[in-house]
Structure formats: structure tokens, C-alpha cells
Image (cartoon, rainbow, N blue to C red; front, side):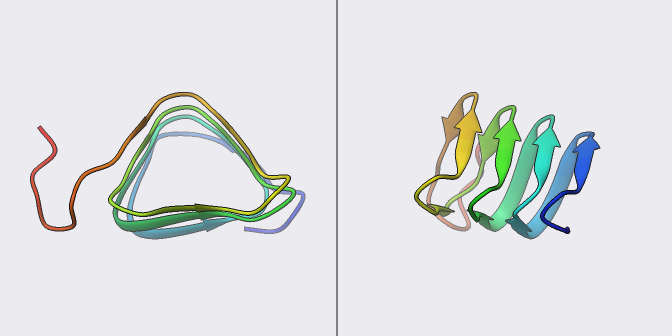
Length: 71
């Protein structure tokens, strides 16, 4: 995703690298990375969350061990 990209959707992926703006829930099986100036305005469910200083996450985050079912 480009730095200025904006999407509104539900995302279900293995890995996510974001430096744009996402409005909606994100489920990632392995990892979510939010790079500055990226924003996620919605809930995140993933075993690994990495955020740059200056990145924004507005919502709930539910983390679990890799390979565990998250209910």
C-alpha cells in the first residue's frame, strides 16, 4: 500500500505491512506492521504487532500465540 493510500474494508491476510490508512478490521495470521505515517482505524487480531513511532492504531487489539486458534 502506498503512503497516501486509503481503504475501507475488512482485511484477512497472513502478513500486513501498512503505511497508508486502513478503516476496518484486520486479521493477520502471522504479523501486522504499521509504519509511520500509517493508520489503522479498527480492530486488529494477530500474534505479532509492530508499530513505528508516529504510527496510529485506534481500536482494539487481540493478540495470541502463533498457531493458536483465537476463537
